[in-house]
Image (cartoon, rainbow over all chains, first blue to last red; front, side, top):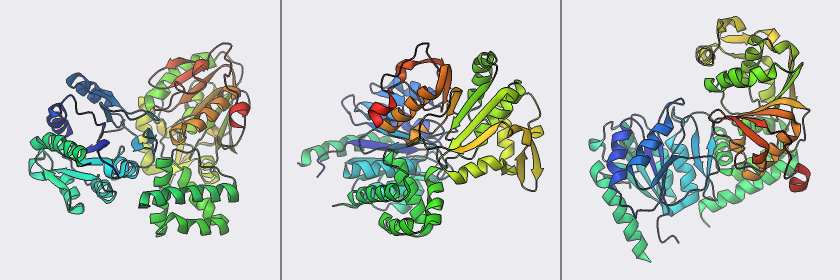
Amino acid sequence: MHDHFECIVVGVSAGGMEALKTILPALPANFSLPIIIVQHMRADARDWYLANHFNSLLTSTVKIANDKEAIENNHIYLAPAGYHLLVEDDRTFSLSSDAKVNYARPSIDVLFESAAFVFGPALIGIILTGANSDGAKGLKAITEAGGQAVIQDPSTAEVSAMPSAARNLCKNAKITPLPEIANYLIKVTEEKGRLI
Amino acid sequence: MNKNDLTRIEIELLIDAIKKRYGYDFSHYAQSSFRRRVENRLNALGLNTISDLIPRLMHDELFFEDVLVGFSITVTEMFRDPKFYRDIRTIVIPKLKTYPYLKIWHAGCATGEEIYSMAILLHEEGLLEQTQIYATDFNNTALKTAERGIYPLDDMENHAKNYYEAGGAKEFSEYYRTQYKSAKLKGFLKEKITFANHNLVTDGVFGEMHMIICRNVMIYFDKNLQDRAYSLFVESLIHRGFLCLGTKDTVAFSIVSENFEILAKRNKIFRLLPNAKLRNRIGEKHA
């Protein structure tokens, strides 16, 4: 049905800055899949600071996702502080200020479950370093919809609780050391493109 | 047909059933959030499919009222986004002081924390006496909570922190009385507030308002419904009236974008331009 991946979602918490700094700059300029990231942060955190930092580092456009904004290739989106980020069927974002999920807003589960619903097998979900269990259920939803799950090898994570929780719930996920995640993404997206 | 396609059909049937039976129309809500709320409700009830929800909703009105609460309540705080209230104080209040009386509409007030925040701010600025506040929501249960003005005592610490960050200069605890584990806001804050049921999806223009506050509601609507609501706000504002939105809301990409000037970009305070004309009037586009 799907002959290629269309989108990548990433969930990351404590230690996220370093993990993202390892993965994102290692992706080549022609790696065009949109990447949507939930980095746990406080509601009053300066989310735009993180976006600006990566925007100056990368060739892709890095920005805070806006309500109703269309998801585009060559873009990296960060969930805004204080809001859940969700994906709609028409490949636009919507935001929600519903209750926290797993003590988090934005919550990784909320993004992952909505993206799994929309992208199905064309989605890659990645769980990185973090201190709680947010994202494990969402990653499972991605695999149940036929998508690909990737988990940072907990032994390479600054904080291993989150990838460990994801691994416990999501048995068929690809466990990958942090420095190899970018290469793995390049490989699977090329492979899937060649299959049909 | 895969599971998600089935869910899409079931959501459509659910929305249709609610609309035909009770008149509430969720078809122009952002579907991902709506679906999440439905699924949360299914889990809480121990039901397996959305289809299982429909017969109960059809035949049990009390059950529907209960489900409706879950479809609409958003989480809020007093002086949520303190910098917003700071901007209201410094940018909007001086202009509001030029009017002999004020009408303020808080659309989608949910459980009311933000209405009382505004009432406190108006009181401190000496404006509450000449102000009439209309607090509306389509959810009667939420409205009742708002009208009661009683909130968990545990939340007060955070509310107080927000109040001081918002530029509050009094003792925040002067504004409520403690009863067991609750805080009851003082009666004078409520005197100028009228609570009423109003649904932005189906109801019409609401008075001639100096200021409309509608925060974190628009993100739950799709673009069509956002345009309807924004048009309604333009029609309900007086000449040069103020529109205050949530941090992530904006009129910028709506059909009324050209009618407003921006007073506070980050905190989303807008003002009707002189001679603002509605390009698309409500009746023509959404009849």
